[in-house]
Length: 175
Image (cartoon, rainbow, N blue to C red; front, top):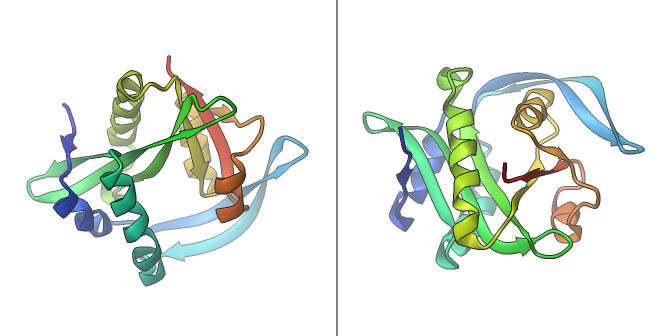
């Protein structure tokens, strides 16, 4: 199954994905090692602040050629991702996985793996050899990326690190 490439008008549907989850463990980076620690969050959906901050970022990404793609169940968007065209990495060989979510009721069913593989397959057309991911420090999220073959970034991208210093910065080379 191939995801649907989104139009600019469909970007607003990203906020309809059910983001709810219980988070009970986070990671922090300590001397190059991931350290898990307990912290509890009951996430009930998107923070209105997220929509205000990230909608212009998504639109700018789309306008410069970024690719937004999603899976639908009937008309409902259940999982989506976005690849930015801006060069990242030491030599500009990486592209950022700008957005990546799987709806709460669809997690653990392979949708995330399919989205991630699709993202990797788009890299040659973008002149890139890998993905750069600035991930929320949620242990489940980071563990997903590690299971897809990602590794900790040797040097975080300075611009992305400045935006999200608590994030875990990862790289995934195209396999």
